[in-house]
Picture 1: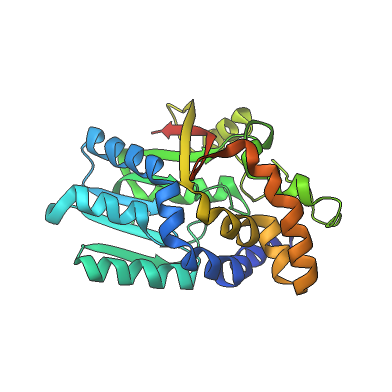
Picture 2: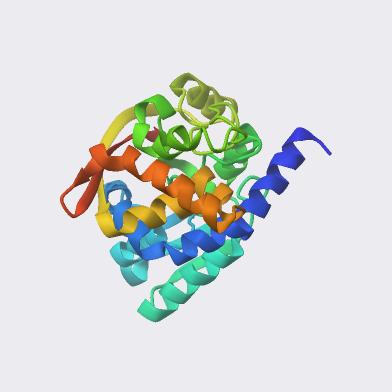
Amino acid sequence: MTATQKAEEDQAALWNGAAGATWVEAQEPLDRLFSPFESLLVETVRERGARNVLDVGCGTGATTLAIARALGAGGRTVGIDISEPMLALAAARAERERLPAVFVRADAETHAFEPGSFDTIVSRFGVMFFADPVRAFANLRTAVRRGGDLALIAWRGPDENPFMTAAERAAAPFLPDIPPRRTDAPGQFAFADSRRVRGILERSGWADIDLRALDVVCTFAKSDLIGYVTRIGPIGRALRAADVQTRARITDAVLPAFDPYVDGDAVRFVAACWMIAAR
C-alpha cells in the first residue's frame, strides 16, 4: 500500500467512524460556530453570478444548503463528501426544507465528475484532507466550465490559531502519544503555508491564484464548551478510548486552558484562515 492509499483509507475510516458521528451529533452548535464563513461563501457565489455550485467536503450540509437557498429554483447545488453519516444528515436536512440540493458520497480527489458541469467550486474547511492535493485539484478542475473558479476557506497555521490547539497543549502531560499537528500532511492545518497552497494549485492547472488572510471572530455558547473539548479533534478522539476516571482527570485539566476565551455566557476566539480564490 502506498502512502497516498494509506492516507485515503485513514481519512475514510475517520470520517465514516467516530469523527463523522461526532460532527452529526454536534451539527447545530458547529453550524452556529462556523456560520460567518458560510455567509462569506454565499455572498461570494452571489457576486460571481454562479448558478451551478459544487461544495467540496460539505459535511452535514450547512454551506450547501445555504447556497441552495440563495440560488433558488433556478440554481443547482451539489455537496460531495466521503462521510456517510454526515451526508445522511445533510440529505435529510435538504428534504425537510425541500431544497434542491444533491449530495454525493465520493472522494473529490478521484470522483468522475461530468466535465465542465459547475461554475464555481466552494469549500468551508473541506479541502485540507486530500491524500494527494495536486491530483485532487486537477480532478476538480475538470468539473468546472472554462473560466470557472474556486472559493475556498481553509485554516492558517496552528501558531495563529491557539484556540484550536489549546486542548492538546493542556492535555499533553496526560496524553504524550498524541501526534503533533503537521502542516505538510492531510489535516486541519494542511493549507497553513501559502506558498505550498499556491504550488498545489499551480501544479494542478489553476490560475489567477489569490490568498487573502481572513480573521473572523467565532462565538459559541459556554454551555457547549465541555462538549467541544471532550468530543471534537484529537483530544475528543483520545478521550473516547479512555476510562471514566481518565476522562474526568483530563477534562479537569483542559477546561481551564479555555478561560481566556470565555466572555460571560459565550466563548469567543479569532479564527485565522485563508480565503483562497483561483480560476
